[in-house]
Image 1 (cartoon, chains in turn red, blue):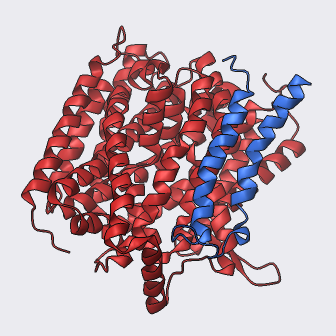
Image 2 (cartoon, rainbow over the protein chains, first blue to last red):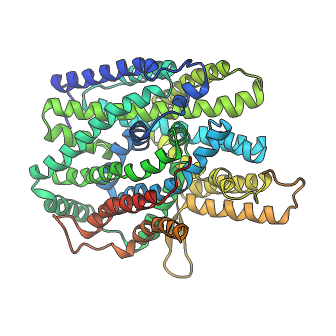
Length: 491
Length: 65
């Protein structure tokens, strides 16, 4: 693919980038609170976001730039199997509907800001709190780094090579997140999501007509898979379990992440969250159609160095200069929103569950906000350094592990909403087994998140995260049943 | 009576899991629709179905928070 600079595309791109930069700084005055020097305001936008802001924020934060690049890339490479992102992002919403309003209420009633706060409040255990908080931070770091991978793909397509453009974009992001907190990505999400909707709708409506219709798109992909001897339009029999468990496990993990939980805690009521469980699937429809861009890449006969280039290359080849600039801006801004919310989520965890717990228990509200703001800067610079100095594959592997790790916090975070039976030592033992066991299995499989199982018949793969969660729960139940309670369980 | 109907509405939320997490159910090409093999349009169709089921559950939930 050609990577010389297209003036029109670059100009359009820079215009939109400048627009959201202004919005990012203006955001500190949007829905202005009495003071931003409070973690509830800086880190949760004052817990005041209604249906529409929550819809844009969670949508912008959950369906990331990396998704826009990676899901079509996976479908381009392996076919049907890469489509698991669709059932994943459908079955996540009944779960959100049932669980998240209860979690939100708990957090609002007691002033909790993070998952670590919820767990500490429920079980009074600093150890379990630290396990949940640390898992959140290390699972999020590579996720932020991957947003940079998404951004790099579009910068490359614009002809902007090297690390400097990426570093500039990220430093600008770090500065307005520092000053405006969660209000910045919430406001930018409006622009980003509307742009992404326009791009994807235009792409799925116009590209197939240039490529001979959807029937031809699927036929070309089929032919390409046959020729390559890898990939298929349908699942192979031994992929059924992997497909279903990846979808289900990812759905359970999705709202355990600090960035998605931040979006949930920032909303103004349980009703807002339930309404969003009804409305957010609109993004899933978009994602499903976007995934098909992978097949369109085959129909357009693209020759690619890396599968991650399929979406940018498709736009560059089939769209005019100004529209591909618009599309690239949409994707790049799509990286900024989740990266900002992720760094805020990680900063909240550090401040509440490490700084306040161990360094300065008497920290003031303003002090908390200050620590969180500085941490968000450190987190973003850290992610930038990871991408610049370490191979991309490292971030990819870590992000896969991150999904498995964060899933292990589910029992500690969610079970306590329904029962007081579990005690902290049992949940901590379960978390430990799930975390270490899951990591070992992934390492053992050559950094693949799938584990091969043979129950007498044909061997099949299963998502390691779900396997580790099963072990986690089994250990927690067993320890809780065997070890007698020293003190009566807290209500 | 009223309460049990509301409980029943929550059971609707189990349906998407059954429809989507058993891939042999839909892992076929035919019948195709608008050029989409069955595998693809079937799963895409579950987006509006799930949103509708969730909406019914939403309507029958008391929002006292």
